[in-house]
Length: 169
Image (cartoon, rainbow, N blue to C red; front, side, top):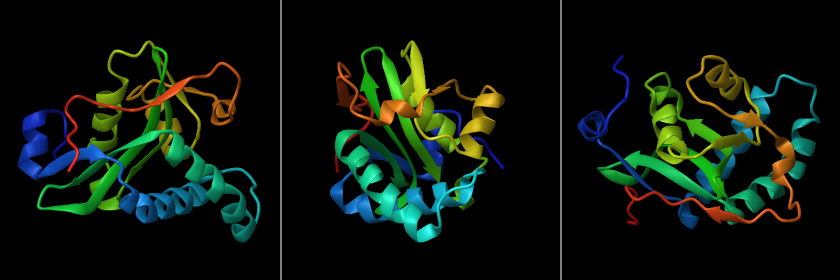
């Protein structure tokens, strides 16, 4: 399996990048909640309680932050992966990275992370999944886990993510 590590590889496999659109909400919300529920190692509430509590939080993050969507260039509605993050001063708040199963272990999530984290002095992770822990442990990405940044703390001025290489379709 080839690793995605440069722009020519991205073009070769037909992956484009764009900002999160409202029409992506169903896929992003469902995949985030289902994968996060499945990945938690600790004891968490029953599934119905988890979804009732977590869904409003994820919706609030989606409204406040931005997502970078990796999609099929032949079909922009076919999402391969996304990273939900926001800028905070010279830091990046990385909330969640999701890569569809068939595109995992190719480096797509790390590639997207690096697109957003480049030039940042520090990166915070607000959701800690086994995959995030593995990437941090293997030093593929660097982030400090801090779930308290999910809340509206005073004096935190965040901005939706933008990247010069991302076009709106």
